Length: 308
Image (cartoon, rainbow, N blue to C red; front, side, top):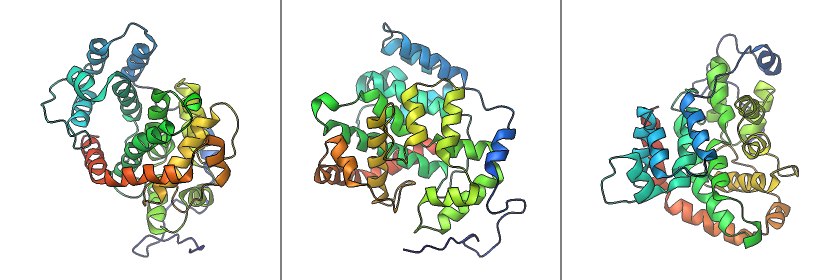
């Protein structure tokens, strides 16, 4: 494995003007006056989530207030990933016929939360790569959760939301610090043999977990999400929601073996599998199942990023 960081681009050019190495990002973060607000549609979806009487019709009615979100959910339900042969023409169809209430609730919330954070589509940290990791995580983390002892399984909605949104810090970086994000995207894409976390700490003196947690707290998102966004690269964290964090960490390490995501070249300590009461062979079998679905997952990621 190479240990030297290449700071030039793939074409041998110097970093963009005004982006020194390392960047005093912590000072820059402190100078920001405000963060993007949680979109109104996301707030409405959270209200539906808190309503014990909410049903598929209520959720569909709320989502359909946003035409783009509506199109994304319908596209998702009709994607090759689910192989549904009928025609999906409404969000209610997507909920009842294909995806289910909890899935659509969390998918819509994640899509809505990410909506104001527009970033480049291309590159190792582009929206397409991040959605590919998120979608693969949503399926792999559920498989890992199902392999835990019954009394240790986590709520499916927490697993799904954590899978989709745990890397939101990259989107915030792209939203608030365009030059720094473009620079990081280039050097991560160039230094494929190094871990993303080590690169961003060296280049920016800050990591996407900290940025993402900062945004999650500002949006008053559920604490399990805040904890996972902040700690998901730390397998030794043992505070609140640590089991959800560990599954996210294992997931990222496993996907890294497929060349996906920001945990490539990161080893998962054996004690993590022990703490989760997971057999490593079962985890690798789950990863094989994801590998077999990878083409369909990629097609779904392309569909989602085509409209954002």
